[in-house]
Image (cartoon, rainbow, N blue to C red):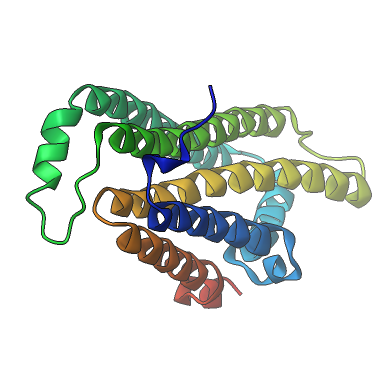
Length: 228
């Protein structure tokens, strides 16, 4: 069945296109352009490599296992939250009439029709499903990292072997953060998507605001200055 493009007026389609352009554009710029070398993730990657190199020289690795355990717990929390949000959104779809009526009482809100409401909720569902997949994969990679840390040799045969082992462990740890960061980014853009329930202009403005916040925290924050 062909899609009925008249479900939304053109400002809604324009706002949706702008939202997707902001998300995809920021992701490409932050993760795949030369600018990525100046990000907080790149700064942390240096410390992750140092951590793994120091870990190989420790007699007791209790501290390292505790750090890995905390990381796994944090990732698991966000994965569980994504599932809860998905379940909640399915419940909201069943209470569309009451939700639309409530939106009608908000100032400057443009109450959606039933089809519009369904598509807006589906957008949020898509965002949280994407976030769940990212967190779930990050969770698995974090577990793999824990196993490799446990299997790491106590005293590598040479500095060259130690550097190679540390680089391998650090690369997997960096990949854990890469997917976790994508999931967190999806949460931020989900907040922007909430603006679509009020007005397409708010939707578009919220996407710009999220990009500004993400850029500030990943490339201009005080934390980045400290890490460097």
